[in-house]
Amino acid sequence: MVFATFLGMCSYLAVSKKVTTAVGLGAAVIFVLMVTVPLNWLLDQYILQPGALKWLGAEYAAYDLSFLSFILFIATIATMVQLVEIIVEKFSPSLYNSLGIFLPLIAVNCAILGGSLFMQSREIPTLGLALTYGVGSGIGWFLAILAIAAIREKIRYSNIPAPLRGLGITFIVTGLMAIGFMSFGGMLTGGEEEAKAEDKTAIEKTVEEKKIEEATKEVKEEVAVNTKEIK
Picture: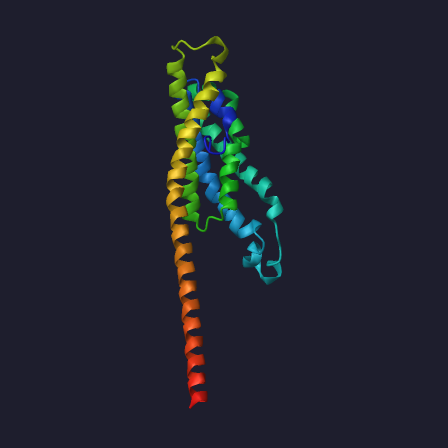
């Protein structure tokens, strides 16, 4: 999400100064996405979508509560973030102090809400796929913040021009990483475009063959009629 849609950039830039802190926040994001995306999928399927309340009875089939999507999604996310905050504070006070305000701010992290909204817009069909999508999105965000944290620790000892030190070089490195990762996306979608082109060619060929058959049939019928008239 960071490199493709640039979501979650606030905590990505602020908490990526040390690898240990980045690992802690990344693990928290994975857990929150793993839980909230499937829960929000259930809410979307059985409450929010038009006609989703038909399981309550035929009189509720016409109800459309999709306008409540943002409120319910954020409420689910905030609940899970509070749970994570309690667990981290209980079992790892040092990590809790390192993360500071950015741990509770996961509740308003656009990457977390974006996971649920992308799930909704892409119409993921099953709960299992929603869980996989949530875990995959969390792991992707974790790898992104881990990579930039490791790079920033190394860059700290490099001879960087003064105007680019700090966030300047971080933005440049993030942009280069985004270009690299988005190129993999192009590789994955290239085959689909070729397959669509082949399907289109096959359909056009089939249509042409049918037209030729129909034209041949019409010619044969005309020949048969002319033959009968001659006789």
